[in-house]
Length: 111
Length: 110
Image (cartoon, rainbow over all chains, first blue to last red; front, side, top):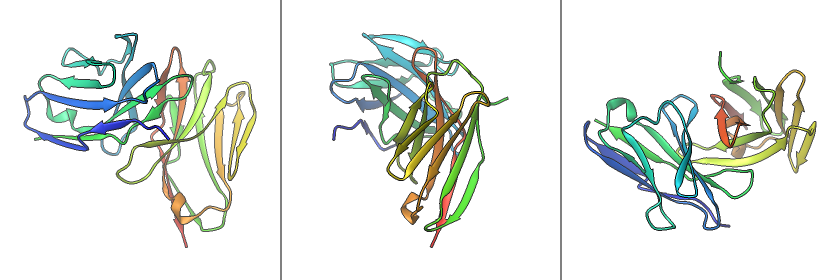
């Protein structure tokens, strides 16, 4: 069964550094998402992406964040200058119809 | 207040039924979902219900939706130790964004 994959599974970085989190959505899906889950808290929506542009974003998704679909299979989330409070689990999701399928997540630790 | 609310913890014995409850606030939500998260893992879609339905059954899972009270429940029949996980209720609002509850930790003891 096709699934969403994410790499790396765990990323450790220093405050102020840039990170890129990578996702490979399910191949025939058209809508892509990033969510995050700070430890012990609920899953929060960051951004949705369709037809090579952002379709919706939350207040969390400020100028430090960007998304890209560079090659038709990968979907990336870049954080330009990480802060301690960016430490969280980041989930990618994709959908074709009404149901979003989630990847296993990347745990980002900012020191 | 929170958009989607769930009780934080539920403990049951193996073989019993589990009922996880959720309340939501947006009456325009079109779909409501249940996701399962095992330790260190991602979110696994369990089931979903369209807002014009009252009930949906899928093997051991039964979803009940009370639109008047904006109440959603997930019943797991014959709960097994492998069902121990965090269960998230989510509502789809607007275009496609999902809004999640904080999750209910289900602990199944032998």
